[in-house]
Amino acid sequence: MTHAGSDAVSYARHHGGKTAAESGDRIVWVKLSLAFLPLATPVSDAKVLTGRQKPLTEVAIIFAELQTRDGFTGVGFSYSKRAGGQGIYAHACELADALLGEDPNDISKIYTKLLWAGASVGRSGMAVQAISPFDIALWDMKARRAGLPLAKLFGAHRDSVQCYNTSGGFLHTPLDQVLKNVAISRDNGIGGIKIKVGQPDTAEDLRRLSAVRQALGDDFPLMVDANQQWDRETAIRMGRKMEAFNLVWIEEPLDAYDVEGHAALASALDTPIATGEMLTSFREHEQLILGHASDVVQPDAPRVGGITPFLQIMDLAARHGRKLAPHFAMEIHLHLAAAYPIEPWLEHFEWLNPLFNEQLELRDGRMWISDRPGLGFSLSEQARKWTVLTSETGQRP
Image 1 (cartoon, rainbow, N blue to C red):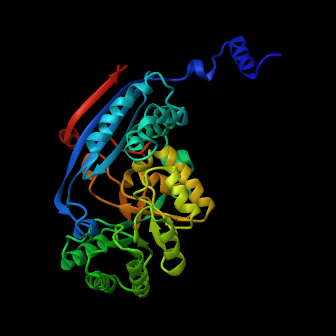
Image 2: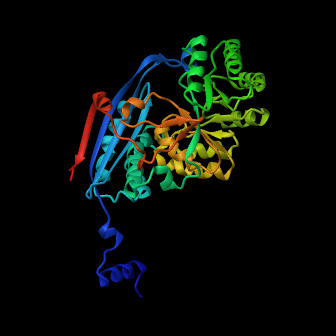
Image 3: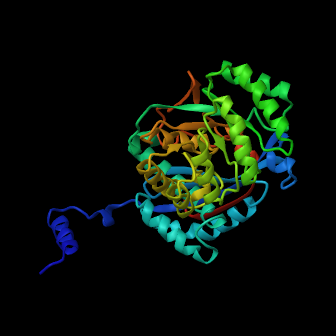
């Protein structure tokens, strides 16, 4: 008796064809770059005001550029704030050789291979953040190869995603400037506003929130983000006081790994609870979702290891009826949010705009998918100028 695999080979050769393994394209060149994107103004959230972190002055970006024997290309990136950029880049350099010779269409296989290549440093955190730029670049390449925007490759539920702004409401920004930023965002077509809370003076949080709500009106979508700086008692007290502000959600009220506390808070409050941006693996998000710890899940593709694990998180979250609001990196998350079955939110940060030659379109409160294939971006000259380290492996065809 012949095996199915040998039957397929015999059939292909008898008819003058090749098997997929014989005819498949191969990755022949990998380039990694580490760039530091400077921020015009040092940024502070509650973690700074509570003394746990320093103001954010730059974002480390780790780019991966891939090319195949047949000339197809893909670009992906990961990032880190305040610390870890050098480490992510170094580990990515260790993994790069493992991509050479692989069929770029076998993304899950490659992901597993890279995960095992770095298994001694774990399956979360920096270990998977170093895989992210490769995984995202492979998905970008796959969609480019198909001539489709990435959202269409997944099977989009919509051509645009409702979009809210975060960058105008940080705690280092005086309230009068926050109010000006809110007005500018609305004029530019934003669909929602998020402001930071969680500072030691809770009365000041409420004062700023009240002023923003008054400026926006009662029904314009408004969110708050405490960046993990409340304990359980403060979170429930503040959550009850904030019920009157008709918020879309309260974000990261507690430590990111306090599943039990978030579940109790979500049960006690009418205002939805959102969290998950700091988690760095599918398994961590699984605990959050199965533990009923949030109403809105907020995965971050570069942080969880790329698009491959993000799709697993999406599937689990959808099966349990959770809303989706991916963290940061709107250039990637627009495509993923567009493919989510339940109406999601997209976070608007203009910080990464200088890195790319192309820009996203915001209008009518939503971010729109372009007709460009893949992610729809190419690296700018400015991104090259901010690059401090590069590494190449393989040969460009």
